[in-house]
Image: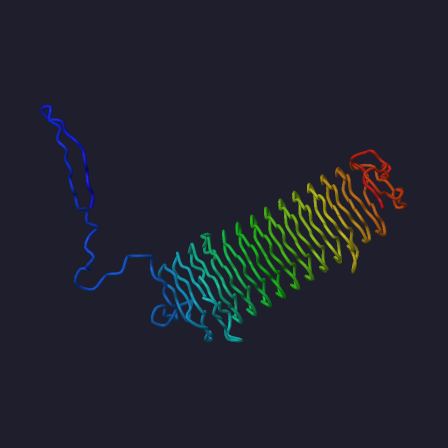
Length: 403
C-alpha cells in the first residue's frame, strides 16, 4: 500500500487531498500445470556408451566426444586392446575425470588414454584424475597436421604414469598445471611452443622430465630421477623457481635467448644448469654436478649464483663460459675442479668469489676482469659492535675475491 498526500490551491480555496494506491507484488498462487525450471548453464554430460559411444574408424576409441560441452567420468575406466580410451573430436570440450582412474591394458599397442587424435581442435581441457599404463601417451591434447595446429589445450590436476609414450602432451599455447607425470616411456611432460607448465612434478621418466619447445614458461616445477635432462626448453623459454635433481643429463638445459631464475639443481649427472647464447642465469644454485655447475655459451649474463662441488664425478667448473661477450658477476663458486673458467675473449668478470677449488680462476687473455684479491688468510680481527675496518684488501667495487 502507498499513500500520497498534498495540497492544491484553487480560487483561493485550499483543498487537502489524500490518495491511496495499492501496489501488488504479483500473485502468490502458481499457474496451473508443471513448473518449468529456470534456464541455466548447459548440463554436464556423463561419459558412457549411450552418451559418448566409441567407434572403430582410423582412430578407434572406447568412448568418443563428438560435440562441444562439459563431460565427466562416473567411475574408473579400463581400456580395451586396439583402442584409445577417450577420444575428443570436437573443439570447446572440458573433460573432468572426476577423480577417477583411466587405466590402459599392458601391451595393448600405441594408443592414448585421452587423445585428440591429431585433429585440429581448440579449447580442450582435461582435468582432475589419473591416467596410466597406456600404450602411447597418457594425455595427448593437440597435434600438427599439414602445418595447421591444434591450440590452447589444458591439462590440469592430472596424474599420468606408466604410459609407453609421454605422460602428458600439449600442443602450441597449451597449459599443464598441477600435474604429476612419472615412469613414462618418453617425456614426463611434453609441451610445444608458447605453452605454460606450472606447479608440476616429473619423475623417473625414460625421456626428459619436462620437455618444452620455444617460448614456453616453466614455473614452480620439480624434475628428478629422469633418464635424460630434468627440464629442457628451446629458444626463448623461461624457467622460474624450479628444482631439478638426480637426472641422468643436465638438471636444467635451455637454448638461446632463455632465462633461468631462482632455480636449484642438485646431483645431476651432466651440468647443473646449461644455457646457450644470449641467455640469463640468475639467483640459482647448483650443488654436486658431474660436469659444470653453470655452463653458458656467448653473450649471456650469469648473475648472483651459487655453485658448489661442480665436477664431483667428472671434470667441471662452478661457472664455465665457453664463448665470448658474457657478463659474469656476483657468483660464488666453491669445491670444484675450477671455480670460474672462461674460454673466450671479451667477457666481463667482476665481483665474484671463489674458494676451495682445485684452481680458483682459469681465464684466457683479452677479457675485462676486476682485480682478483687473495683473501685465503682472513685479515679481520674479532668484531663486536657497530663498526669494523675493511678487510677485503681492495676499494675497487668490481674486485673478485679468492677466499
